[in-house]
Length: 121
Image (spheres, rainbow, N blue to C red):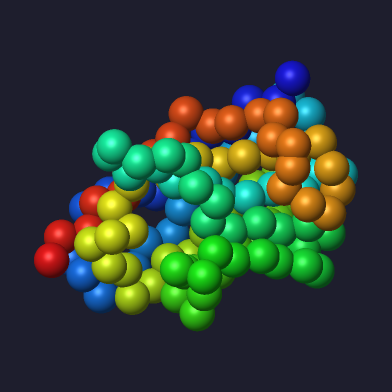
């Protein structure tokens, strides 16, 4: 079983940037699609970004296209999400996710514990 641990969240002003990291232990991530989801208070968890096993294909929710960038380092068993031009509506707990499949982020079989991102206006 893989363990996923997110870091990099925090409080930032609107227009600012943050970089989230997800470190994996227990098994390699290199054969799995990975991604990020988020959950705001009172809302359902939603897809944010995804990346296939070798990093050559990436997927973005419309709400973050052009502002967020997902990447991975399979040699270090790490996943990243660069977030720029942050908006108050980006405020949420962000979760790292690992899929059973190689190219698409479904179904998810492992979740991190989440990291809080708060964007002030």
